[in-house]
Amino acid sequence: MNKYSSSFLETSYDKAKDESLMWDEKKIIINFDALISDICSLYREGENYSSADAYAETKSRRLFIEFKNQRLSRIDNRSIRKKAFDTICFFSLLNKRYGGEEKKNTFVVVYRENDIPSWSRFKSKALVYSNRIISHPILFGLEKYLSLYSDIWTLDVDSFFSSSLYKEIE
Image (cartoon, rainbow, N blue to C red; front, top):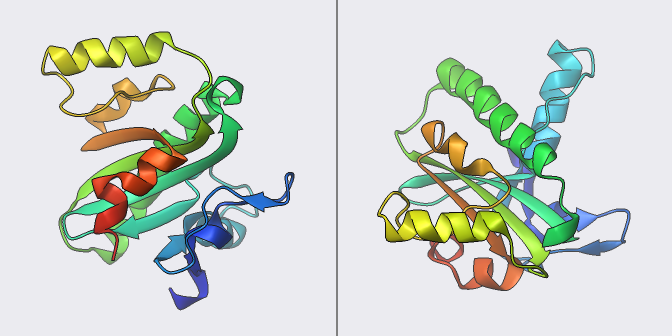
């Protein structure tokens, strides 16, 4: 797995904009896209899954992180949902093969900034108040994936850096 070790800075690099969404160079994460790409080139003749960009662990969670170096209004919701589904399917296959410690699986989307109010944010806040979601709004129509993940977080960069998720990454 050392081949796939990376920093947030490297893994969140956006070739089109020639910049990284994240600036942390110290915490080590796994470049999940690169790992999936290599496995797919071997077993799927190069036809890739649509996976999250990074994988990280905390004491109690597995984090699958998708970086979107875009404003909230520019993000393709359908693409995010596809990544959430393909990521957990592929990880389940790997986990079945190689096993691992029992932890919560968490899908995280980190985006550039919030530029518009959204119906998803309002709906998620209503679910928070009704105790159906415990902590934070879920955007991009990802609520239905709570049956596949223990938790889903959608945060702008600053919120991610100040979140408990980021602080727990070893």
